[in-house]
Amino acid sequence: MNLRKLRQYQFLLRTIVAGFAGAGIFLLAGLPLPWLLGPMFVGLAFSLIGWRTAMPKPATIAVRTILGVAIGASFQPELLSRLGEMASSLALLPIYILTIGCIGYPYFRRICGFDKPTAYFSAMPGGLQDMLAFGEEAGAKVRALSLVHATRVLVIVSTLPFILEFLYGTDTSKSLAGPPAEAIPPIELLLMAIIALAGWRLASLIGLFGASITGPMILGAAASLAGIIHFRPPSEAIIVAQLVIGMGVGASYFGLTLAELRNLVLAAVGYCLILIGLAAGFEHLVVSIGAASPMEALLAYAPGGQAEMTILAIVAGADVAFVALHHVIRVFLVILGAPLLKRFI
Image 1 (cartoon, rainbow, N blue to C red):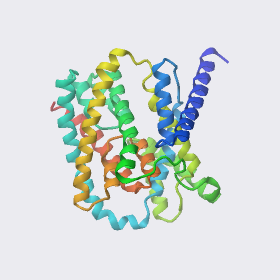
Image 2: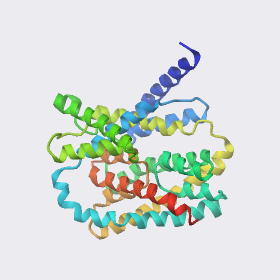
Image 3: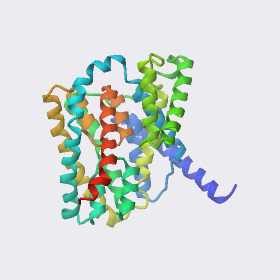
Image 4: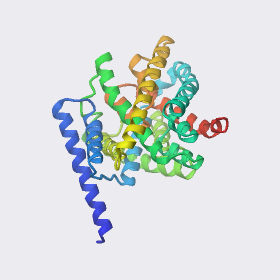
């Protein structure tokens, strides 16, 4: 075994130990989202002290396919009767994204002193990898974009559980987010695995955005609406997904310097406060038109990561299909519109 391979295994072992340690601390303390936030903050701490953690890309893809199936399985036949209500909320998403852009771009450009492409793609509430790819092509500073979007996910996902518990009395400290594997028929577990793999591969082949989540979500929704599957993936799979995604966010801060902390991370934290305020405003608007409950409206409009917001919706007991559909369409609109709007800025 060569030295590089040995080091990769060392990083992986450290990541797993850190993830379980973080989850254990949060569980003992009764803190929200222990399997997501615990690994996230321990991974962050390791990154800040220079201990590198590494989550293999295949593991990240695998857990995202699990979440895609979980979203798809939430599409029940009775959801079709709510499409009219959901349409009014979904119609507000383009306005929401434009509002974010009109506030975020001047914030990063004028107040934070970012160059134009970096300011623009820092402001866009899309997926991390998509914004990095578009930003790099436009000449933006990739390291800055990476830290800004990682901080957006970190701050929003770690803040929302406390908001939900304080405002709505939602318990997000529970570790189980669905039935255990032993309660699900083996044939359905096999079908879920097939849906996850086939959905991801098909979505990748046709170039669908967010293929690892979107593909399994579409196939899972079709299977659920057809009555082929009747359960979400087991709680054990959701727990593993939380651990992997949490450690991945924390690991994004490896190599952070004091200058980056002062100039980039603090700027991103300030932007997150603006985003939370905007999400609260649109939540009030969605609730006022009767399109959703306050908790689901807030989860649908809080611009965290797709995977992280799906986990939070599952653990909080929200309408996962409603929340996830908003985030899928938000990311789609940003991916579709960001390169076009860039030409006018």
